[in-house]
Length: 173
Image (cartoon, rainbow, N blue to C red; front, side, top):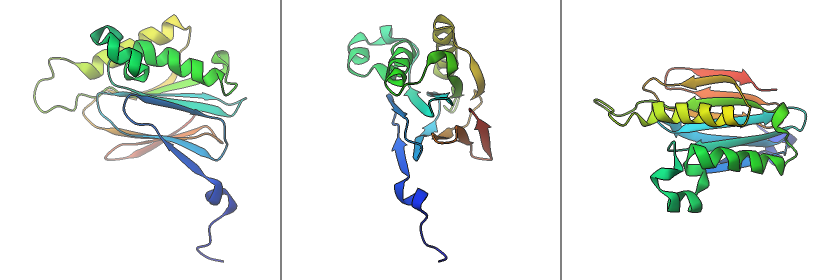
């Protein structure tokens, strides 16, 4: 019947990851999403063998900016959020050696000069933390002056990156 929902759509689950949050999932019907990444970074992790994924939406590079806030919301910072993401991924049987990582965001979205360069500093901090963990990125969509939205289909490992002028898809499986 035209317009009838499919079984897959009935059981589909969208998990929205807000600013300074992270989420992991191993349900094949799940989609992890985060919206309007400006200077923030969306770090996507996917383990194809476990069919498990994670998404971190971090705001700032270093927890030393606010240790109290880092203790309360570790996902706010690159140096506390990335370890928290890997720890959460262990809980859904993802193995760091098998994880493919993709980074998006890190834009300069302020009108006029950006003397703080938060987007650039976030990109550098994420790369530094990943090197500490011996992980590498399989791709990225960073910098520039536009916002990005991310959707990870946990069942397939397909990542959709929406920009104001185009949509990109990346296979993380």
